Length: 596
Ligand code: GDP
Ligand code: MG
Image (cartoon, rainbow, N blue to C red):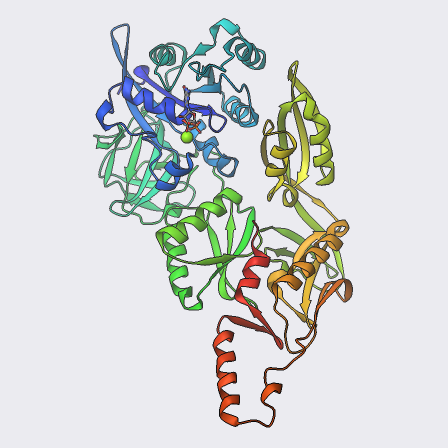
């Protein structure tokens, strides 16, 4: 294909502004999906994506579109919209020359509109601003066209207005993509260089890798090489999605398509890596390759201990399709055998958990998620702590915690409430700008641990749902952090240990000891519950003893009755875990650990 007729673009938008719906409409208008085959969100293939209405894995599809009598090939690259998957978004953007910046005409610019726009600008993309949902009675296209024009420059009258729902304006948008976006440029005679922007595991075909060719050409049956690992593979199939996979005789400069090499694990075909020819390799990769870095860790344990091997198999299978998923075995006094699993963020955690439960039929307990700390001990060693129970005892010189750069957008009446919230989460304000008369952008530097759990929910409730949030990892800081342990009758319960800021240790201790007092049934003897930092007790509760011993009733009585009673007790103990002498029902652990 002649690069001059190719246009590579993506649609970027805040979540729910209508990206998937618009993509569907484009598929229909260009004729690649017949109206009768159309199902909502055609491109969001995974069930979970469709149910939650979010796009996790980006996909690329090729659409024909004629302008002024010339046939063009439009490659639309769908990007995931959630912060957990920012790296995948940025790789998808790097595969394009332009971006359609889609904004809900009833909502205006939101935090992820900005975050995605900045990523697109970093990649030097041409931006086409578009207002969507103009069919809504609440749409205010004039107001938001002005907001958009203020943000990216240009005339508000040039902002296209469309409806992904009714199809209005979609053809004009396709024309504009052809007219305004530059065609790809590359060196057709150079050694091949293609960037991987997605790779998906398929049960039947193995890993399907999506690439954008920058230079040279890739052809079927030749051997290719991954530039980051030097691993080489034979190209079994190469083609384009339109939207079903269609094999071709190769991919040249500017083309977007898929490769199949027969590898079975997406980690052998990494997003961001460069593919070249083995026989004539390029000298320099396209750059920007980055290993996905887990930000949040949680322990996953099967409710039924005998499911442990099944859980391991399930994680192995999920990893084939999720390069960001990492895990290693771990044991807990309270919960038995399980895994410590690393995630990109809480949404990623939820999705993995849901897939394990749904696709693999597992019942799981997950421990409260935590971030990763670097701890410097007295002998100047740095220890990476992914589980609070690994936090070293003894003297500690420094604890480093991960930080994020966060952006909050909201109507200006909420500025006070947002500042108060960020303050209480140990945030440092970095700046504040007015996007329009009544909308403000606030920038904060915040500890990841303070925003990763309930921050967004609290933010939403304090702003009546109007605030939007975006964040990205941004360095670390040294903080006054301590480990709080929970002890039952003097015995430490690993699963309940938490790392908190010194000022919040007391409230964590009180909260946890009270929760456990409610959850653990009374025993034959009094059970003290304590929260401690090292050997210093900071909170205490106690569960009073049951006054009458079950056996006391039949003291001196007949022995068979006594045995029966003991038998019955044993029955009830099956679902109990012993912590020292204390029997704790499994439910108590689950209830105390559940993060929701
Ligand atoms: P995404 O998160 O950006 O992919 O957004 P979706 O395409 O999933 O759309 C989010 C919601 O907005 C869905 O309920 C859509 O039906 C609705 N929606 C999308 N486009 C339009 C539109 O043009 N008009 C109206 N009225 N609703 C739309
Ligand atoms: Mg979507």
